[in-house]
Image 1 (tube, rainbow, N blue to C red):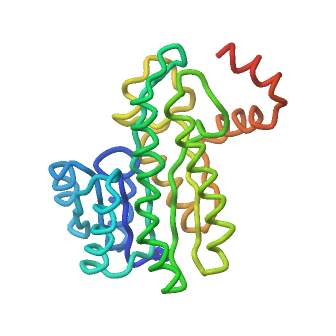
Image 2: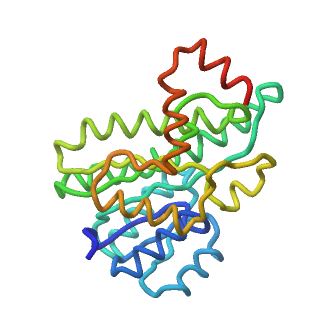
Image 3: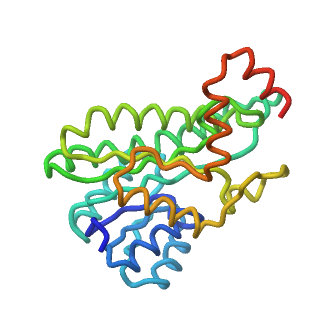
Length: 246
């Protein structure tokens, strides 16, 4: 049995979010799913009767506050929230676009912040709960073509660390999910070789295992994680020389 009775998954219309919702529901968890597309959520509901659709735009603070109210009324207090909504588009520094940067921050970072605002007080009041913030290994250090994406994911990593430090004493588990490349509609735009790319089902299973154990960081696949963490520890001069060749 999984340790949660209820769960909320954002960014659930495709990829990792969709697979996580199906895995949770198939194991007896009541799952609320959020994305902008009502049609895709309806398809997900058809796949399992234990899933409740709650369409919303994560860039709207009010919409996510309303979503948490609705979910709590429909399926009960949220035991696990997987804040997974995200966008990616390659962006080189030479073609820097503030609009792309703003969109990345609005979805990847503020989309999580908007969900946390109504969730944290409820979990503190209950004295329990688990928050899973989905970032990326791309947030470890600056990488080529990631001028919009990498900073937004680095912000999520920092936020997760702060929350883990402060909320653990309140009985709340905070988990940080840092996937590598996963075969999803989001990564389909890439025109470069994606090392160690995983299927969404595999990624979701790895995440679920880590969440069950209450791990802080759930990062995969390990060869890519090890390589990028090594870059993270390098002196800046050496890192910049190596990364500049990628």
